[in-house]
Amino acid sequence: MLEHSTTQQTQDISTLLVTGNSHEKKSSEELKPLLVLMKERVESHTELLSGLLSMSQHGFQLDSFSHVIEALHAQSEEITQCLSLLTIPVGSEESH
Image (cartoon, rainbow, N blue to C red; front, top):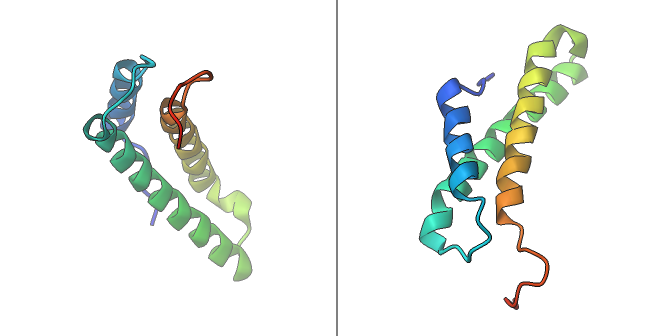
């Protein structure tokens, strides 16, 4: 159940952050790797949260699973970083 962020996955996110820092309009093809990475992180995050909930409902103490909580925290930071790249800058002329 527990899937820690690997060094390669963190480097992939760092690469996306560096290449995605410009506020130029991104094509859907340019956003695809970021969206795939976010989808994987959210799925893993959801799986870990479901596992923790299930364990706590069966009487396990969550302090025994600090490594899972640390992984969730790391994934939350990665998800937040990815989402920050998708934010449309204030004053953008795009309308939805």
